[in-house]
Length: 298
Image: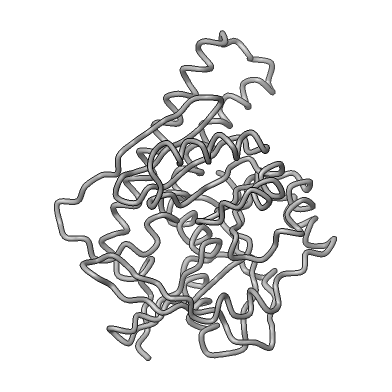
């Protein structure tokens, strides 16, 4: 079983049209979704000192996700304001991350020892941890990072060299611009780069090859697209990591018996399968209100 850590942002989504609050946040969602998909999952972030902390902690407690390493700040929890238009979410800025931004995690030596125990750590551009990512990567786990739509070259040059996986939200770009971005991120150091394309699906750049897959349609109306990208990211990562571990396990046990062409075929099929799992999980979650439910009125 993979042991994974969501490291960084949490947020409360205020659905203004329904007067409802829902828990979320990229790293936080990754921890929740990983648990739902069968991984040994933990979360480490910053909570504020308002009533939204309880809303955010409720799903963690419900799913028995360890968050003992979280830090607490004398600040308001992060929130965004959301409206749904035919199931598609429209997000405003809110308070720009709240406590996650004003009092970001401080990773101490004790935390590094804790992080060493994970196979995979996932964070994001909304976690405000850029200056600490290098020591997290050096701790040993594979490091995944969601850039969202932060594509500035200086930012890519800083973050990509320490990543195993880079994710980008590219629904607003054409295919050629998206390919250029993924190639650039790998040239800067990402091992695998992934673009989520909204309704158009996803594009992966892995070992010099592109893999494209359309999203899966639903036979029922979309309820809420909130968290669809995080759903895809989580399922893709878990499936890809699990498959990769099979090859690594054989190699580490002296059974590196596959020809180069066979390994390439395995990676081709693993990449495509991981994308399919990502789309399936994302489609399923588009039938749920909020990112994964647990709404509360306000």
